[in-house]
Length: 199
Ligand code: ADP
Ligand code: MG
Ligand code: MG
Image (tube, rainbow, N blue to C red):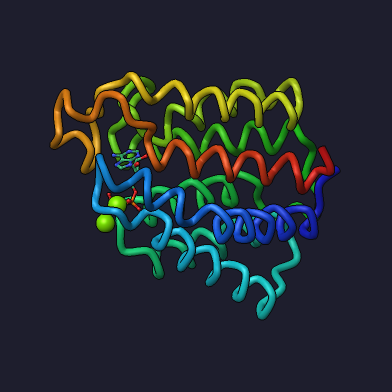
């Protein structure tokens, strides 16, 4: 079973990984965006880690809803409301249980990803974070390590795609040939989940 500590660990591992990879995320956002994805997420997840330490929410659902709220209020770019919605909706789906199963997490994350698709209007193949999150959630039934592999493959597979949502879509065909920054950060989020689980 996964308790609040596990979810706090997921968020702090994500914050550390975003910190480490911020420059790469911003570099990916340079040719097909406005070169701020790494700094956006660094600001957001630094705030998430600080808030979780201060408020110490004690259920999985409360950890994720607080984290999501914090992302929405600290990240100005498109990714803030999108990741914020992902975590808030996932947290809401987990309810107020003190511990949840891996199956419950997989189901809740699916609801979170669906909320992101509703908010942003992106579908798989549009060259966004959705191209990472959908295969990751599909693979989560098999385990955390499988989800991480699926996420990394999903992020890499955005390179030949033409962007149909977000800033990169303004470039039309010129968005082809670049890995999507949000799909890349989404793979960090899923890898952090596997790391928090000790895999
Ligand atoms: P901004 O584009 O406002 O500067 P960021 O650079 O932080 O925001 O985030 C860009 C990333 O957000 C993209 O690489 C893409 O993965 C994701 N994104 C943008 N628009 C959408 C959308 N409508 N649906 C899903 N993801 C999106
Ligand atoms: Mg940007
Ligand atoms: Mg921006």
